[in-house]
Image (cartoon, rainbow, N blue to C red; front, side):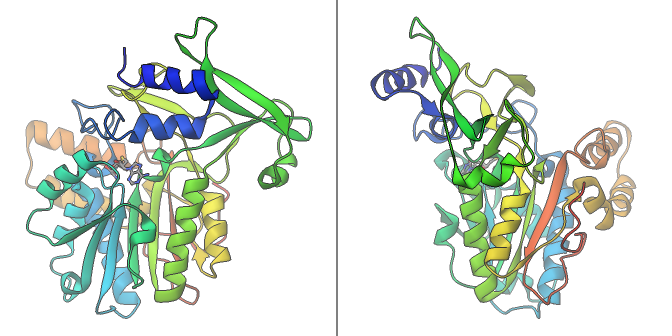
Length: 364
Ligand code: SAH
């Protein structure tokens, strides 16, 4: 039995079913028994593999994209280079290696990592030894300075709530107990009208399920306000789409889908990211959101094929096969190429960062 299950059963027995958001929060971030607190989940021996863990090319191209965007914005002499949810620290390490030869970039960059897990902070420290790094608990702790922020597969880990349409109202999907009180079960509360979902009455029908991620919206607002005040940009890459329709709450264990209610705290829980609310927060703050771009297109525009060819020259046999497979995995439409989307938030009257669509093109 998972270490967290008895605690969840007690909590539900005493105070009633949990929202999906409360359940995700406990399972992922419980300080001693949560998923991220208790393991390094990445790579072949873990539960999932992310783009920076697939190939160094990913972080190198993102690094050059950020450096070019920094130059395009007048190369501010001091700026925050931030990454929320940095995992093993691999992406930041590749960004910093690739930008070493950009004059002035390292001297100006103050690296900030936003990480909830003490275990992963230790791994990041090891990966990034030799660099001066500041760790923060939340995006709101970042300094008020020009901000260049990269979030890769971070937003999908933030807690979502789910609502099922019933008439003009919505029933919230919850996690409760079966009749024996021994296992977790999905249920749903009573139908209520929800102001934040009023606009979804137009494009949904009875029985449809939609998702809201309040923390992602709040983080976009926080980042956008800093960019509006001090300049900079944010690059957000994740699986998802423009706005949600349907159940995307999922669990992964050992690289396979699992039941999200089985083994709480021992499986990775995520949901697809809705980019529309993130773009809306940018607009509220007076900055721009790029159109959505498929990850494959984004990486091709940044020159991944040329970089792959250069790296291939030094490789043979298995290493060459693995390198070719990694290029395909990052870009091919049947792999990560179209499932993953990239969106940039940036100031008005500045060009989108390299690789991104201009604002407005969201019909992917
Ligand atoms: N960006 C990395 C890791 C993605 S996994 C990569 O692409 O490889 C999600 C990361 O977000 C982990 O580092 C996890 O510990 C962190 N995380 C999850 N929820 C968080 C929260 N609320 N605040 C800060 N970090 C969080």
